[in-house]
Image (cartoon, rainbow, N blue to C red; front, side, top):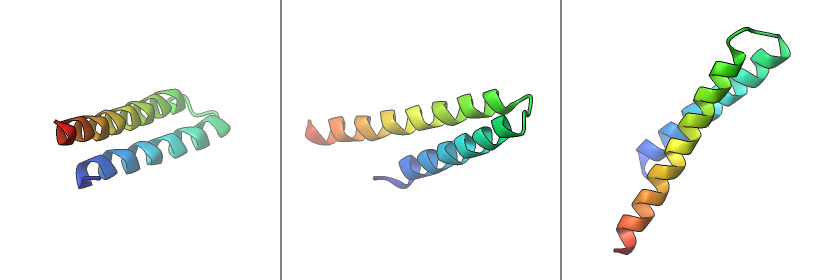
Length: 57
């Protein structure tokens, strides 16, 4: 995987962990942080899939 995909994946995972901790402590913005983490994870998956598709052409 490229460094860009790993970076998006790592940052998304970090945001999901922080959002989960925020849910435990009842932070108001925890849901937003969780959602941002999921968006970064989805973007990393799309970048990974795109690179695999481009490599097969």
